[in-house]
Image 1 (cartoon, rainbow, N blue to C red):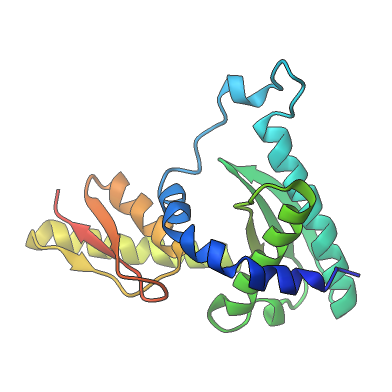
Image 2 (image 1 turned 60 degrees about the vertical axis):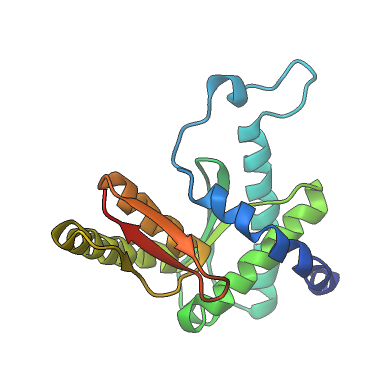
Length: 202
């Protein structure tokens, strides 16, 4: 059974998470689709695991933790693990998993943070692991990309900046990627949980 002290650890780390939010978003706003460098894909001379191996280990730890949660909740689901850019990614698919997503993904976000804490406790290193359940984030990404493309077209036509609604770091990252691909500039403004993206003309 997953250790309930993770809830206490989540409380203890809340201040650290808040202070690191701007740094985390900066990392999120860089491309996480870039392939691993050859130098980083191989273990170094000291025998330290490569970055790819460390991320794969994060995925394994997260999968074990989530499997136990599924058993406790008596929910069916299959786990898929991958490495996307500079983060581990775990997806739970199959069956009715809506209870694990919640309204607007609140439960999913909470489970992601608990899973990251489970990884942190095992490795001693902060994790940027991404959790998806029932394809929620994948569907959200597609919707956000379409919305961002509409705003990009609006800014190109008007020549004036445009602001989007408040979003999570994951959502802002999707918008920043679309804006950059279109040759425009974007920045995040405001403070959580009302932080939002402003799209600027080129």
